Length: 230
Length: 242
Image 1 (cartoon, rainbow over the protein chains, first blue to last red):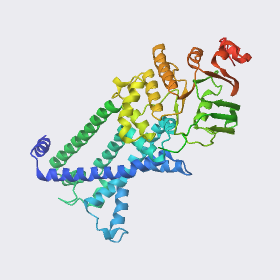
Image 2 (spheres, rainbow over the protein chains, first blue to last red):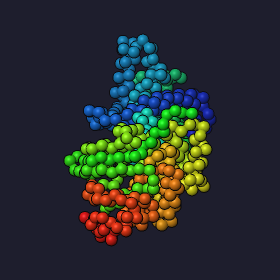
Image 3 (cartoon, chains in turn yellow, green):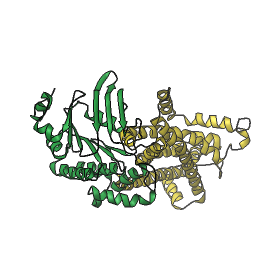
């Protein structure tokens, strides 16, 4: 009980250390979702609208990549960015940038796979109308992404959920350095192992509240958009 | 002033056209000319090939055999042709947004899009619903919006696939009024229907199809007064053509 009270006090007191961790967590996860969207939505649209040998296999692989183990992604990015790795000269290991890269790799398949399904379903519906209006390939992609935008928000939320909850990959490539690469999830893991449960619980509460708030905002934006555009 | 002769898709000619779906013939040996004038109405039982003929005439599907020419040209671009599907799909935009999209797709000048959108909304009587999401319209309103979208292409030929199927008489009349207005300004309307009354009301000439073959093509008055073929007589009498 006293642990719960301490956690609540920590959250309500506006502890600067806590807010630095929250800020970094949001920056990393939202940046990763943004980059993953830039990769995933066009990739999903490409797979939805094109037919080529091996497409079915590519879709199966993409769907399977939604379940990528974060520690495996973390290890792969670690090996790429470590001093002896192919990208070691970039000097990104144990930086927030490395964490963004790792989470982008984790989230992009989720957004791509969900976008592919969403856009393909809409394409089945729109195909004949767009053909009758002489819409070319680029116009089709733009139209489908725009008209599916409210459904694609769900894909982005799924990606954000993955990024916000993830600990394995960013722990490996970020190093959980206090004040530099420590996020909510890595801090919760660390504080729990140290036995500092109030801070761990406080961070857990904040993390859940942020996820609920972002989902609530996205839901509200989606409903408002649907009321206007249908 | 342009020195180019105006390009028209008329006459639209089918010369011994056959269309196969896999190995199955959908249309066989269709020789038919659509020229300027009152609407041409395609009639015939389900599966007779009306929709396939309309799609081929629009250029949405190629002929497996024979030739289709638009204004004497094969492979003519479909810029000045428009098609309204039996169940048109509303884009996830407002009513006005759907029309703006069709105008942009038809390369309408950006400066003219708002004015033309207002004009087309007026033509189909949807001005009060301009900002409503298109998917929330009733069936009849959606058909009128689809008509406006088709007109955004400023077509010389407008293909309508059963434009009033499953609409009530009030909505049907609204669509028929718009079709008459469109035809009166010189747009060639080619449409299919199951409604013989509608074929009488709107048709200048009638094309009767059965099992993918052209049974009769004649002026509407002659078709209903003096049908030449037994199939036409039976169809007009309300008998089932199987």
